[in-house]
Image 1 (tube, rainbow, N blue to C red):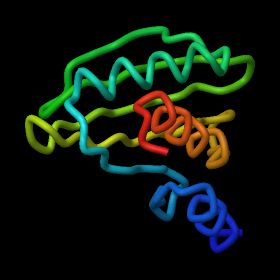
Image 2 (image 1 turned 120 degrees about the horizontal axis):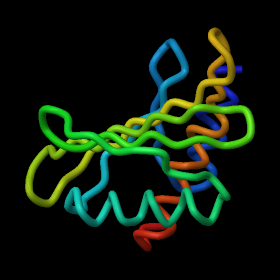
Image 3 (image 1 turned 180 degrees about the vertical axis):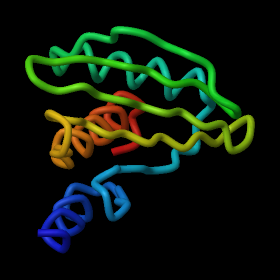
Length: 115
């Protein structure tokens, strides 16, 4: 399953990477405010509601909810023009929905006009 998920990202033109516990991440050549705006637009298009925001050490965290998933998005400023996005979609206590986490990144990329 891991190889299929990585292959799916490559064929769509993205380079989404994953941690062993189902967290998707990618780095964009765009400022943190640009990536945050694109992520919010992507979530809205997907019908996922942002439920809160908070500051983290080098950026911002967004919390969102859908019907049965809790979504966490971290935006980390790597430089003024580079931002790392990390997404995790939790369904219950144990299951992480890597497909949804990946789709959020893919849709964010589309809003940024990269793909």
